[in-house]
Length: 347
Image 1: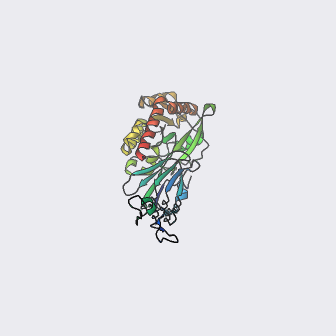
Image 2: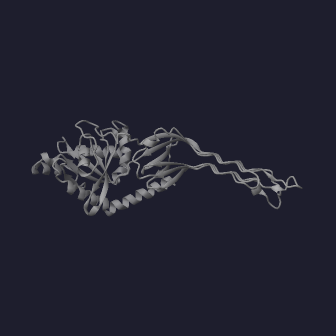
């Protein structure tokens, strides 16, 4: 995942519609036997297509300009011009297109194979044959083609994962991911080892599974862009459940949790509607008395579990808690509401 790219700026232009024809039929005995000008062709669309096999926008990195074909003009004998060729841009699931000037989200792809026309081509103009009527037998006008759309667009990827790992650098998130999935993130004892989101599938009972994302560590002030800032925080918006990973050797477990929650709230208050869970990592160094003391510090309304990725302690209990959270009625309802809201915003 070192070549992970989640943000692309590209100039986009759909195709101009072809002009309608102002042509008149010619016969042996009559130079203008009637209008027979055909319609112009439609300009090419720019289309997003979801591809579940893609995990990054890297393949679009060198696309500085995406230009669709113009539609062909109509011609005599009622011949319609050919439509401009559409351009299909394949993107990973969770990709949005935002207009650079207005900041408005214009499209969002969430399903494999889903196609969204985010910049339609101009309509083809009507030829003069279309305007013929009983009171106007020889119209000498036709429509020009519809204009193309153009502008700078921002393609952003927000990782789609069921569970997002939230925590300060060196909290043990990458170690946890490597312990319960087949993912192999870079692990080292220094801040910001993880510079890009890492995804892994967590196997569960009865051949079930769910997706977990290890996201770059938060620091205080991340909502203002400090550290990895917004580049990290936007990926959390997609996660149904947030697992706060707090190391057992933290100086103040509750304060660390409160700082993390505050950063999420400052970035987007709707983050607080998600389901929170706490995992106390590196807990192999704790005895029962210390575990009880830490439990007393933590919020009563947020479930917590003590884990150790090194000794594999508590990992099955963690999976059970995560699965219950993901399949809870409240969480399922919230996910449906979020999806409906996103669809309304992009319509």
